[in-house]
Length: 230
Image (cartoon, rainbow, N blue to C red; front, side):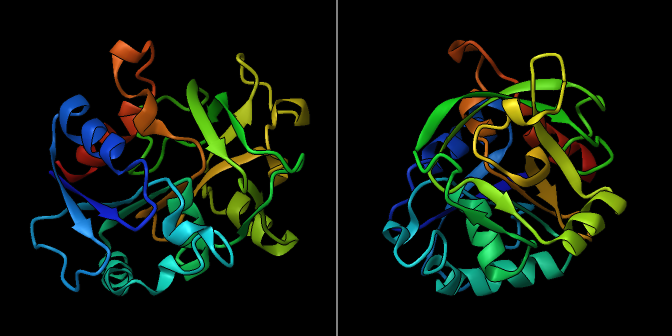
């Protein structure tokens, strides 16, 4: 099992993702420069990390979608291989159309950096199988444009096809607006593609994958991916 972490100008969570995948989860990992035009054959999962790719000019992720490597990332996903977009990476996935919806400015128009509780809505995915359905995990957020939006038809599709994997909740799993940090529709924090091989989430699992930080609730995302390949 080997992860490839894409590095864009402005990425600031690439080292965190590398550490989580390699040191914490115990798998292989390497960096992939955004100008590369080939993805090594031994890469099983690509991570688009958090940060401010290209300074978040135009819209978050709008410029990064045109990086040479992103053409290969799309092909990689089309061939059924795994892609994870975290925070800015999720924004890039929506800009490329690899995931539906859009990430808007937070409802309160402020940058938010804090711990959040996420309820595991579905563990029937390659990214959540190491959790139990209904688990509440503690994962931090750090974003200014994390307000997930999709139209009514898209939301119905996401719900009907079990493509929502995480929702913001209380510590005991209550899903209500008061526990929604950014205004995301239906408290959505993470979704997967129809094929089930692409995950986008605003919270940062890589930041809570090490017990030395006081919490490693995020490491099971990396372990779930490896489990699906075993």
